[in-house]
Image (cartoon, rainbow over all chains, first blue to last red; front, side, top):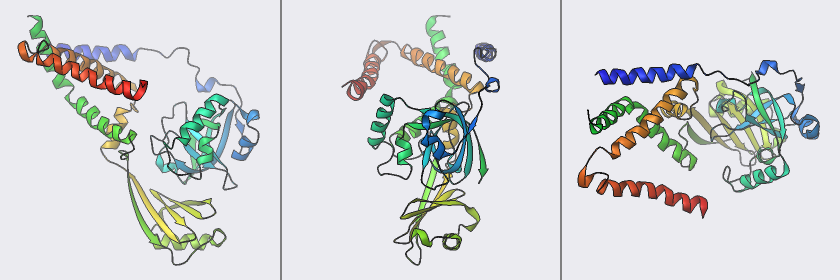
Length: 157
Length: 188
C-alpha cells in the first residue's frame, strides 16, 4: 500500500514539475504588427505573389471538409466555381464536418508552395489516396496556393 | 527486497494504474488503424438514402422554389443551410448534419445524414492528444509506464518459459514482425 502511495506521489510530482515549463521565444499572436489584408478568393488566386506569406482575411461557403481528420477544407468564391484550400494552423487542430455549407470568415497566412513541393503535392493527390474520382474541389486540392488558417468564425450556418 | 520482487511490484502496480489508458489507446488504435486504411470512419456515422425528384432538372431551372420542393420531399426543411452547384449537372444542398446531392439530369437525389460516432469520437479525441495541457503529461507518463511494464514483463518469469527460453523466442518474433514489415513497405 505504501509503495502504491509512493508511486502516486511520484506521478503527481511529475505533473506539477512539467506545469512550470514556460513557453519561451514564442511570439504571441497579439504582438504581430503586420496588417491583415482583406481579399476575396478570386483576388488571392489572381495575384498570388502580391499576397504570398501575408496575413489575409478571406471568407466563403465551405464546400467540403476532409473526412480524414479535418486537415483541410475548401471555400467557394462568389462566382460559385473558384475554390481555395484552407488548412489548419496556429491553435486550430482540425476543421469540423459541421462547417460544410456554412459561410466562414478565415484569418490566416496565404501560402504558395515551392515548385518541387507543389509537384510532390500533385503527385500525392493523383495517387488517388484521398479521392477515387475528381471532385468540385479537386483543382483547389491540387493547387500550390492555400491559406493556413489561424482563426475562423462562422458568419452564417 | 530483491530486484525480482521490485520488478513484479512495478509490473503489477503499473498494470493496474494504466489499465484504463491501455483500453483507451488500444480501442482507439484499432479504430484509427482502420481509418487510415480507409476501411471505415471511426469519427462519423454516415447514412445515405436515394429519393427521386419528380422530373429532370437543369441548372437554370433551380430556384428557391425548387430547393423548397427538394427539402419537402426529403423532409429536411428545418435543416437547410445553403446550396451551390459543384458543376453543371449537380446541385449540392447543405443541411445541418448532412447534405443532399442532386443529379440534375436524372433527378436522383442522394440524402446523406452525418453524425458524430459516440465513444469513438471521445477516444480518438484523447488518442490524438486534442485536449493537450494535462493530458499530454498524463499520456507521456502512461507511455513511460508502458515501457516499464514491457521491460518488467520480460523479466517476470524464470526458466524455460522466461526470457531465456520460450519467452525469448516470442520476444524476438515480436520484434522481427514489425521490422520485416518496415523493410517490405518502407525500404524495399
